[in-house]
Length: 152
Image 1 (cartoon, rainbow, N blue to C red):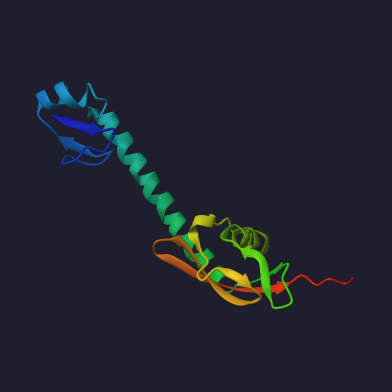
Image 2 (cartoon, helix red, strand yellow):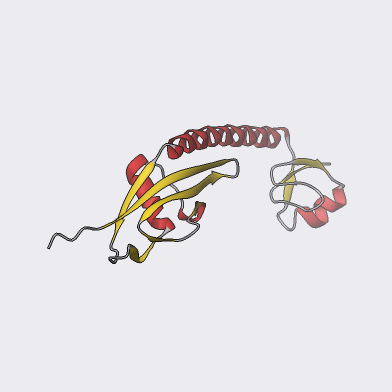
């Protein structure tokens, strides 16, 4: 019997897959637990259409990530922060600060968790910050940190 998996089933397949299973397994395990439903011609067509849409969306995301990676590699961010006379910042520049600066400079939404600030930015200077948009797309953003000038 053919079944469309609604959830991932270990040893059988991932959600959306059309698999062959025994009638008893379908009746006693997959249906009661909401793991699968019977595969009709219409349901198989729906699954294939959904998979095609998902592939197309993934291709668009990959193309967009490549474009954004190229733009980020050319980006130079200039951030200001309060610092002591020795150039040490009162605090540090965080991944959220970098994400906000990228959004303002390039209008590219980057999750702060995808930004690696290593070593931590705690002094005035020039740094290279790693931004990993996808596992295949990583960019290096040059970041210049300067002290806020006091004109008292």
